Length: 212
Image 1 (cartoon, rainbow, N blue to C red):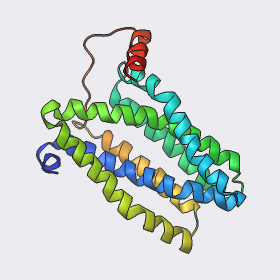
Image 2: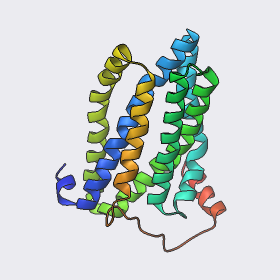
Image 3: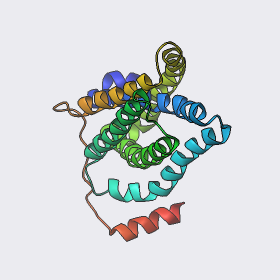
């Protein structure tokens, strides 16, 4: 965690990751719960998680090609915006009693696509900020952010759902996305490096497939 204190640009990125994890952990805590509430079927709990995983697996290779060619910071902001809009939309549908199973499955799939781009861009921009020498420490700090929110958010989600309404969790997720976007938009904050040598998208995709 000393890297968070020593490197101001990585510290800002770490706060972005922390805000993002509020939304991620909240989503995975409540999405299956919402599917179970609507259907009463445990199958749709697993199917909802599986839909996100399917989208993530389908999109990851293409996300790598895109991240090599587009500003990483802009891609992270775009991914956050997609997830923010989805969260507020689902929250609105819950509050108005118009939520349906297909809404949950569609959100899971679209979140998976956005996550593929966002995660790839985040991991590579960390390398830009800290360099190879501090990459291990940066990864440890990133895992610490995930672990911290993984401990805090599940019981918070449970309390909110019990005492208020599940829709408020989706509002929290949307607000977490707004926070991440605002942090990334700070002047003289996180900046990504441009790729110097470029191959074609097909060559990059082929390289990714060979690696896999």
